[in-house]
Length: 442
Image (cartoon, rainbow, N blue to C red):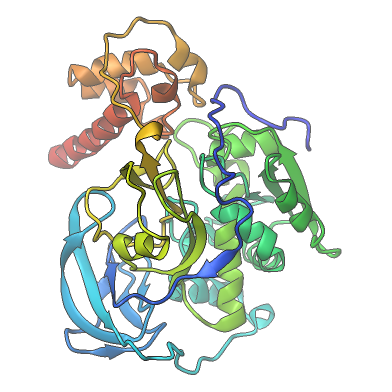
């Protein structure tokens, strides 16, 4: 099973994880206000069930899931609802959000909860408990976890692939989760195997995290078929299709999902959160966030209440340095630069990277020289230079025919382009345009 160790193409950016790789997780103090977007997961935004003026306790449901692919939103601190209004969102838009004034002297205790014994629950009850807890993928995509737990019966799952790669530069959230909470990761694996009816699990961890490999190996259960595979360090190894190829040697065809080849992929932090739901009864109201980069005074791995504003997070890390230039949510390859310090941390925020002037530089785009580097880098074997030319000409139908929608927006093509053409950004805008045109034509 460990024959492949990697996948074809991809790139090798410097991992830049030394700033926080050895720093233990610590809890962030509660801020004066939290802001909880109703859209912080893939699928439909949640629907509010509270009103302005309501007092809420930590863990209370504020908004219910709207449809199957959606997730509820819970209060991450006790306080009073002050507004339900448009607020700056990490994706660059303004989106509906619930504002809560946090009670300054509250002990932040939760209401008494019945903690279900997961082993005695049926398949449907397990999935309902995960959905009610608002658990989503914590690797960045924020896909509702309960959907992955219930694949259609016509696609039986034989293997759970656990994503411990964390291949994005700078980020150490998953790394510290595996080092500090390996037993919780193992419990999450056990629960998910029961839900899926799968017989085995394989944990893929890149070799630049030897302490994480050891921690997971040392806690492997004796009664389950769970193994650890240390993988070659390469980006984007954490992408589902790439990880499946590296770990199992299976190819997920164009337009298909991992379940079509008998696999479900889940992030280690998501598994730890699923375990925590059945250990504490608490929903997903806080997450581990890496705050790093040469532009931050004190890099850290923090346990952060969801809804904490960026400015409060930066202040807790000693503020920005004099030469700080750019703030990115997520990693530098796929993350999004932020323009407002009031944007909140969401369930999908893996890290906050504060880049210094030395880590950023303006690069004017030049004409494509057709060197082919982007073709050699693309992990899904697209032709980025051709797609880039079509994007600049607004030829979206032809882009779709050239498999634009298979693009993962991983940024490998942009990273290797000697002409500094922002290919990944062009493709992101083009994919949005293709979807809009389809809606208009419907």
